[in-house]
Amino acid sequence: MKPVTLLASSLLVATASAQLIPFFTKPRLAAQNQQPMDPNMANPGIALPPSSDSSNPTTPSNGPPPNSNLCLNDVLGSQKQINIFAGFTRDVSSVSDRLDNTSMNTTILAPLNSAIASLSRKPWEDPEDYSAFGTSAYQGQAGEDRASGNLRRFTEAHVVPASPWKAGEKWNSVGGNEVWWEVKDGVTMVMPGSVEVEKVASRVANGEVWVLKGVLNYARKNE
Ligand SMILES: *[C@@H]1O[C@H](CO)[C@@H](O)[C@H](O)[C@H]1NC(C)=O
Ligand SMILES: *[C@@H]1O[C@H](CO)[C@@H](O)[C@H](O)[C@H]1NC(C)=O
Image: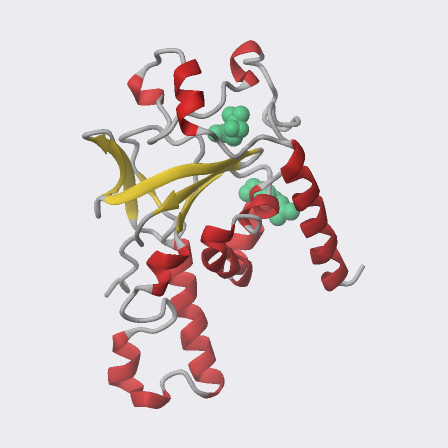
């Protein structure tokens, strides 16, 4: 099958399933139904619909998920408010492959489109490139390679190789930056930059999509 056909059909599947499976949460309603739970286990910001996990604690990790047959790549593109970031994940193969792979769980920290649009520079731009190569920094093949390297760094900084991810638990993102999350005055924030989590948008077989109001630090690491 041609890649184009494959993409189109997986989008169709994702769209069709999205209408059937309530993975978009209704924070207030769900919150009322929540049992008090160990704060370390709490999901950030909003409560998720009661899952069937508790009644079936022995679901094998290689079996179908309790609440969905979808994986992160299926659902990421269906959410308009984060579709810029979703596009980035498709361009970065290290991330795209991971989100398709149901044997690796992931928490995606997807900045809102508005957060990406309001950055003072594009995620694929780096001031160091401009000082080294001037205004033609992103022209030609070498320029394209620089841009895709920067985009990869930005994207990988927002992909945490764990789900479920407990409060306070420190992980290195796929890009290598250390992150954890905590709740301060009722606001869920990804640390160390205190970037607010707007909501958990999706919960599928191989992880969760969290929507961030800002972007995480993705500065180049100087060796
Ligand atoms: C999924 O991830 C596992 C564990 O890292 C790896 O062994 C496997 O090859 C991956 N599958 C695909 C299709 O990439
Ligand atoms: C992966 O995520 C699923 C669905 O949330 C969960 O049931 C499973 O325990 C997770 N596996 C790991 C290794 O964290």
